[in-house]
Length: 241
Image (cartoon, rainbow, N blue to C red):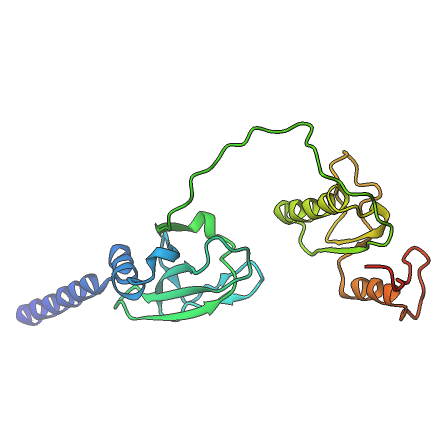
C-alpha cells in the first residue's frame, strides 16, 4: 500500500513538473515574435505584447467593434501595427500564441484593441523623427488672392476626434485665406458642430452632419439633380468650380 502511494505521489509530481515546464513565458513569446516571426520587418513596425495571458473565454474588442478571438486555452496576444505613422483604419496583425506550447497563428485586422494603452506593452518601436519646436505666429500673413464667387467646396469630416477636426479646419481656413473661396461657398459636412475658422464660435461654420444622404443631397443640389431643391445650395453653372 505504501509503495502504491509512493508511486502515485511520484506520478503526480512528474505531471506537475511537466505542466510547469510546459508554460511558455512572456519572454519566450517576445523572443518568438521578435527573433523569428517578425525578425525581418522590425524596421517599419510597432509591436506590442499583452501584459498578461488571455483565456479563450475572452474576446479582444477592437476600436471598430470587431473582435479577435483567442484560439488556445491560454494566450499571449501580440498586436502588430504595420503602419505606425498612418491614421486608422489600416493593416495590422494579431499574433496569438499558445501560452502552453508556443504554437501560434496570425489574424489580420484593421483596428487596434480598445485596451491597447493599458493592457499591452511595447516590445519593439520604429525610430521617431526628432520633434521641431516652432514658435507660434500670432499674426500670420497670407498671400490671399482676390475672392472668387465661382469657387465652391465640400468638406467632409466623418470623425469627432480632435485631430480630424484640426485637419478639416486647416483645409477650411486655407481655402478661404489662401485660395479666395468665400465662406458661404464652402459646405461643411461633419460628425459634430465645431469652430472651423478659429474665431471662437462654430456659428456659420457647420452646414450638415456627415451622413451619406446629406453628402449626396449637396452634390445633387450642385449638379441640378436634386428632387427636393434647397435654396441655400446653388446649382453650379459653366463658370463655377
